[in-house]
Length: 260
Image 1: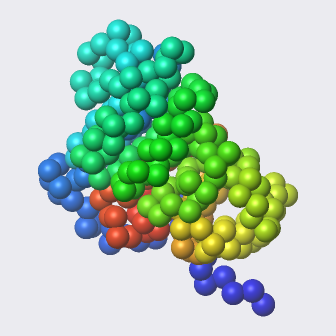
Image 2: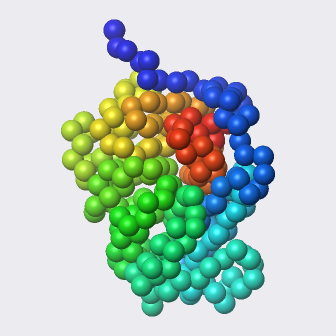
Image 3: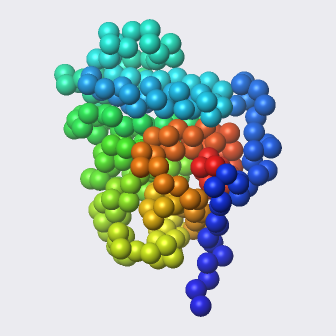
């Protein structure tokens, strides 16, 4: 008989770790500083929405970093927006690294929202940023895609949370040559066991949706929470970022509680 003591089942609307709710910071000053990075010339909906969600979730202070190709478009729309160098196509440029590192030094956590524009120079920037910052990082949507070529950058990094689709996780595992393939045909028990093994091997945390549940996996522990929203990644990543910076010593519990 298989041992599933690592599997924690959370019910909708009923936190598995209620003590985290009670111990949340009571003042804005102590509620954590979040840096949101994303957007390109043709879109900034993701970082703007993440800002709204993180504010509602209780983040203390939030800054948003966008490529300067958006400066005229955004204007004063986001008061907390900072603009960094962009490529000719309007994505984040590798010359933005120093400013991004300065901003991450201010923050307790970094959220890469995606909508980054699929640019090779942006890929170089993100790779360098992940290697040089010591901040906790949550990444989602197309920000995850940038690491298919070098999956170890995020899989082998501590204090890293990947909020991705099952196909994105499948790509990362395949590119990293993980011994057991991730298959869409897996049932609930099989997927829980796979995530247990995967996060026992890698120090990152994973949040993925499948079979009517959102799974949180970290350090071999796996939680399942009923969840059926089709568009879920950005909202989940933004809430998870806030809970993570407020409970940095309990990442699994924080990420799981963010889903309630």
